Length: 188
Length: 95
Picture (cartoon, rainbow over the protein chains, first blue to last red):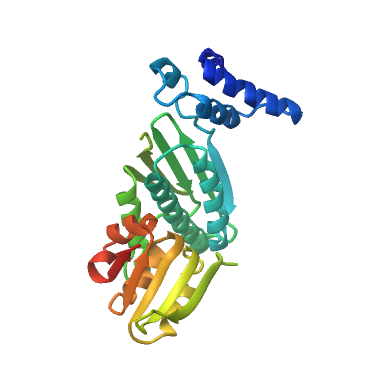
């Protein structure tokens, strides 16, 4: 909250803040963090002073946490949820697409594991944004298998994509499931 | 249930068979794409301009038909097409 109060000291930012508050009041609701940032950012003069820029570090959303059945029909809705979350997290379009594909591959892998071992297995996805990095964790309840190119040609390809598109990929097999942890930088 | 995918067959101005795709291509619908490609014989232009997502299952479908398809792709898909190596064995044009 402190950063919002600081932002108001910039006169044009204050106008943006007042707009956001006014709009919210007319509609009988409170100002969301996104709305506040958007209004203040649009009012700030281009190339504003360093102090003004400092209080407007990109807003990062809270973590995204999803649990879904290990079914391939879940891929599209999970991708939509991740897209919506990534939209609240400023990053270059190419990075955003890399994250979508890497997470999609990890989820597809987890779904295939789930299918092989237990009916109705659950896959969990967690995404966390810090100032400069994204952490993406996909966990399934099946046993990890090394990619078998003959049986599943796209699985080996999927792992290669994850490694190429993310800065760091760690696969941790465990007795009750496999966890894939991926990191990438999102700072511009 | 699969991810929605629209497949529109047609012809390129030069007469080559054309398949235009709209939607996301993933593990749940890559089989549908494979069937649509196999329904056409000979060289084919695969227009992915309106595709926003392509995963390894979709890439595998393209790899298996790399010798007869020319892929037209949006810039958004360029990284996966390059990283996977498809650009090395199929004709890929980034629109």
